[in-house]
Amino acid sequence: MKILVVGAGATGGYFGARLAQAGKDVTFLVRPRRAAALRERGLRITGLGAQ
Image 1 (cartoon, rainbow, N blue to C red):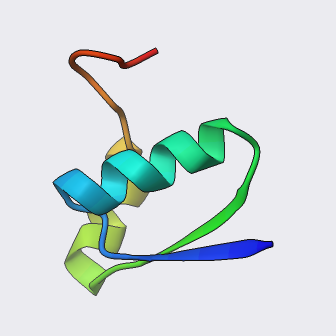
Image 2 (tube, rainbow, N blue to C red):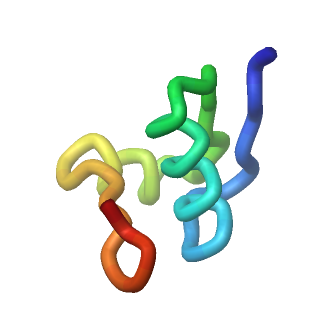
């Protein structure tokens, strides 16, 4: 199954990243400026429950 996450803010980023960590096929639909930031810095989960 392919999963599309619309946005990679706090909620979309968290759930999309966790799904990707679980081996799911995840695609993020983001605006150009956010896409550039993700390419440069990646997507990291921090805080409670982060691994």
